[in-house]
Length: 256
Ligand code: ATP
Ligand code: MG
Image (cartoon, rainbow, N blue to C red; front, side, top):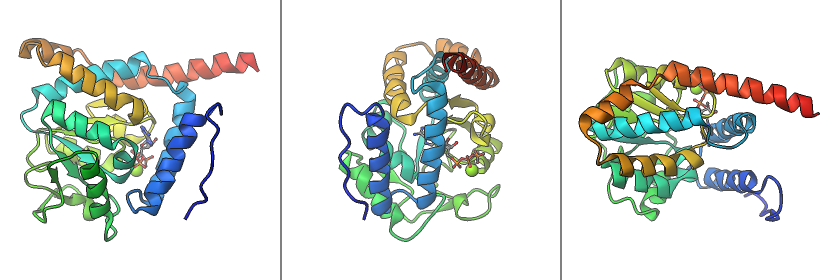
C-alpha cells in the first residue's frame, strides 16, 4: 500500500500529482498494470513538452474524431486499465453521446483485472460493457492475448477508438479495414502513426472536448461530416505537434 500523501492545493504541479496518486491507487486495485504506470510517466513527459494544454493540432484531430464517431455504423470504445482509472466518467459520457459501446480490452490479462475494471466502469454509470461476457473472437493479425475481442464489439466494429494503445494492435485493427482513432501524447510512438486520427493530448483534457464536439456535430449533414473528415490529415497533425514541441523548447531555452 502506498503511504497517503497530502499534496497542497497551491503546489504548481498539483493536478499532475493528484493524477499520479490516482494511478498508484489504480495499480493497488489491479485496474492499472505496473507497466501502465510506466506508460503514464511517458505520457507526463510529453505533456510537459506541449505545455499541458490542448493545442490546435489536437483540436483538429478531436473534430475529425467526432466525425468518425458519428459517421460509423458500429463504433466501439476500447478500454484499458489506464484509461478506466483516468477518465471513467468521461468514458461513460462518450459512450452515451456517441452510442458506441465500451469494450474492455487488455494487454496484461492477470486474473481479476477485467473484473476490477468492470467495477470501475459500472461505478461510473456504465450499463453495458463488452469484452467480459466470455464470448470471444480472435484477430488473426495478432499473436498473444491481445487478439481476443468481443464478437459484438471490436470484431464487428467499423470504427474503433483505442486511446493509449500499443502500436501493434492499432496496426492490426487498421489492417482489418477499421477506422482507428487514438489519443496519445507521444507523436513519435507507433500508435499515432498507424492510426487514422491521432489526438496528441492528455486523455483527461481530450475526452470532455470529444464528447462536446460529438454533441454539437450530431446535427450536421452526413456530407458535411464526410467533407470535414476527409479534409483532416493525420500526417499533418503529427508534423505540427513535433514542430510545436521543437519551437516551444527553443523558445524556453532562450528564457533560461
Ligand atoms: P508504441 O507501441 O505505440 O510504439 P509505446 O510502447 O510507447 O508505443 P504504450 O505503452 O504501448 O506505448 O502506450 C501508451 C502510450 O500512451 C504512450 O505513447 C504514452 O505516451 C501515452 N500516454 C500515457 N498516458 C497518457 C495520457 N494520460 N494521455 C494521453 N496519452 C498518454
Ligand atoms: Mg507499445
